[in-house]
Image 1 (cartoon, helix red, strand yellow):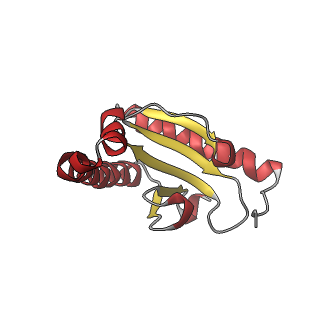
Image 2 (tube, one colour):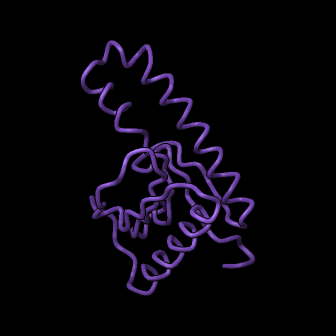
Length: 135
């Protein structure tokens, strides 16, 4: 079942929020690819923070940031799974954790609230929102 999409005004607010989050990440020098609507994701560049929003009315709706690993790690996992276990998976897993921690610390310092998405469609992403007082 496809969740119901938010209205135009709410989606416009998600777009504005995503742009502000992207600006804060770029301000400190982090690579960001603005992927837009998660229902219509545009291709991303490797080894960047992918910033997108989910326009659904469900609990999963909101703005998200996710680290995307390098093309080399992705290729090794696909082309040589036996080597991936020795090198790509451990490095990729640690890098994902470190980069997620870094984004969380940076965004929190910039005044955003973050929540880790641990399962579901946005697994490994940070859900970013305005602080309750600023909403």
